[in-house]
Structures are given as C-alpha cells and as structure tokens.
Length: 97
Image 1 (cartoon, rainbow, N blue to C red):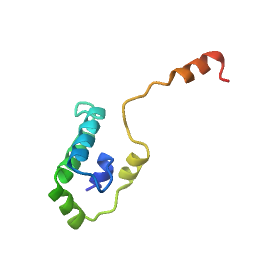
Image 2 (tube, rainbow, N blue to C red):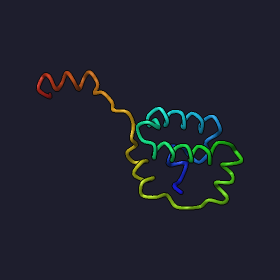
Image 3 (cartoon, one colour):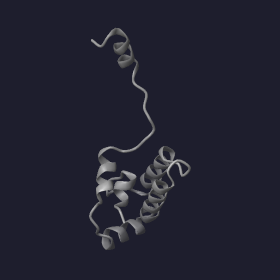
Image 4 (cartoon, rainbow, N blue to C red):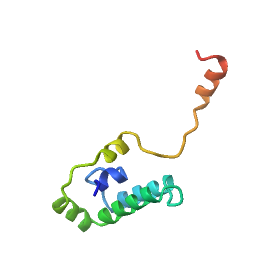
C-alpha cells in the first residue's frame, strides 16, 4: 500500500479537519469518472487517516516506504489545468520581452 500522507499531500501531523479538507480537494481535482483507479487510491488513503485513532494505527503498524508513484505525485501533482496569468499572455502577444 502506498503512503496515504503522500497520496493526500498531507504532513504527518495533520488533524481530522485537515485530512477531510485534503480529501475533498483531491476528489475535486480527480473525480471518480475521470480516473477511477486514482479515486480508489484517494479513498483508501482517506479511510486509513480519517480519525486520530486510524492515524495512530497507521504510524504504529504500517511502516512501508513510499513507492515511486508516491514520490512522483508529490513532486508533480496532477491537478486541473491552469490558465496563464494576464502578464504572461500580454508578454506573448508583444513578442516576449
């Protein structure tokens, strides 16, 4: 199993509200219709970190190193495409100063 903290993009000292907010934000960027496999990973990570007791059990009993996919997700998270800022757009139209 991959590291649920990396999957949700959370620090190890996150509380219940932070875990829930991170899960909702991740589901918004990766809904189940678009990528069901990634959604299942998000759901499993949320279930393993949902409560303080679950996070304690995770810390005590599940000590696996992060996978390569976890590290790549942390380095370059997949999210919604972003628009360029107005300044960049203007610079491109002017010829790039």
